[in-house]
Image: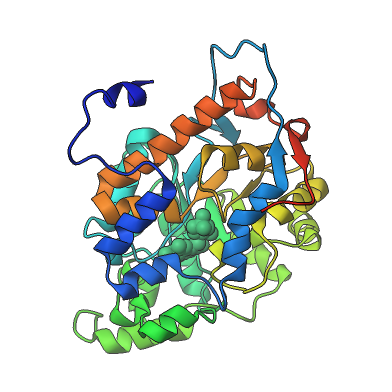
Length: 382
Ligand code: FNR
């Protein structure tokens, strides 16, 4: 209600409320290259579109007279309690979005108690982000390099700087076919953005004759050779387990058979995701895949999801379908584009306020009480 109360004294620099409005403002602020790098998807962007529209397959059936005076949004994951079930998805190259980059986003998350996930492709090295976050919760996202020494080194650095889980992104062993970026001739990595973790990594630097500062071109070339690894198989999970004691969460699972394999290989969590529709055009939407995955996994390990979360009711639907938490990508990035740290803070705070209100309005006191009994799947939807 503090949000409604502040409406009495409108701030002339008031920030947007609706997702669409944030996106529009971000479009006004950013040049074509960076804006479409964030907003665009793979191929004809059909995955990206259905990520959002497929939420409409499920309708919420609110319950009445249930005393919802006290409501609780907290969740428990890997033995820790997090105050928010919505966390920041790993997003690389945030310096192309706003000068504050990852520091602004991470600080906003720390203020709110929203867990932040540092991307391998962060502009700012993971240790610097850890420093500004203090004790606030954070995870590290791994792009699994072709060079095992870099992978091992990233895991070691993440442990040393207080990250509490490793998110291993499996859906990006290479850059996808992104027509809008090809049209704009824009790939931030080729201008050296997003390589902060690599350019400070002892294993990476040991392979170069000159430092990235002395010879950026060669450093970037080397990065393109080792960035992704198309040769990985399920047996390689053992390598990760040998090199870290942190929980290992696989991001990018969309097929129930892969969920079974994840269980078989002893990982600690799964994020159902299609990378925001940025990898495979025409892929199943994350919200459609989610119940198939939670059916296989049951309560054995936590399943989370991202790709298409825009509002509080989306979080409710995902959690009712078995997600223990969700990750938010583009909404937070439009916040960053419009107003840096303050923008991310506003977007995430509003999303949590919307969630809290909607939770109460459907007769639930805790996100942990959500299950499929609050949903009805419909066949005709828009
Ligand atoms: C991403 N995403 C991503 N994922 C990841 O594992 N490592 C990364 O470095 C990035 N980088 C990245 C950059 C940008 C600009 C975007 C928009 C996304 C994917 C991200 O973690 C998440 O899966 C999606 O953003 C979720 O979809 P929505 O909610 O943004 O539509």
